[in-house]
Image 1 (cartoon, one colour):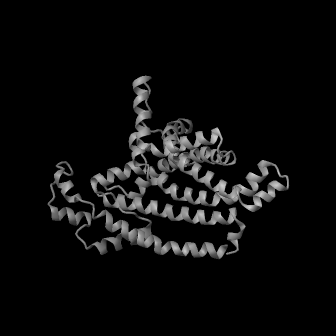
Image 2: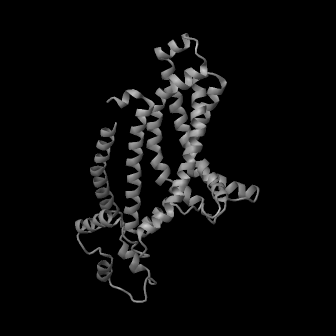
Image 3: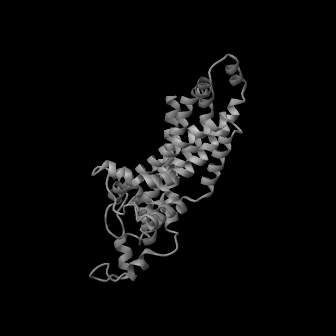
Length: 318
């Protein structure tokens, strides 16, 4: 197992390299130019700079490969992601302030989604074709069909019209008031967790039905084992491997893909920072954000692969 982990960690190096090249080049192909945006702003400085002076000041006059080399060397040797082209603030500081918000929101959404999906999916499988099964399947299809941004808009607009209540606009840090912070993130986390719970519940149900039809499950029933033991010990562990894979694929979306939800609920997370950076063509922030998200994706996939060995002992022998 240790050699397997070492091989996977070494494989991360070329993966991150190609990901960084793609991100660095792609963001500079976005239509619109940051220099044109800056020149259109008349309050950027007391001294109006020409286009060539702005290019030189921002380091954008150099060839693309030199800009990439300078950026990567700063990350490798100094853990420096660069500075914002607009504010001049280090990207590392901005990410350090925004990442806890997105990570907390994603973690809460994941916990809520799994808390709903796993028990419901298991119960729906062992009670196949009952009224409860039909109801839960219908609800999951409904949650899959309804976009998260639509639900987020509804839960913020209609309560304010009907009852005069709306979510808090000013964000409260977890260190300042943990209870109020979690209460503020609960509603957007529920909205995000709904789609996750629907997909995961259907996958859990499908895999449980497949496993419950296996011969070793019939043997367990024939031995007279109670239902709880058969389901939890014999069926669930084998059924969870595809479910864990699905969760691993969706986790990065919760980390960096909650742009619209953060916009709706005015949460100062990475999604809102990315949206502002794309509007302003702030290349260092965009590349820094995508690099962090890419690292998270790779690490989550590694954890998913390692979890296979815990769920299925046969994987450890490969």
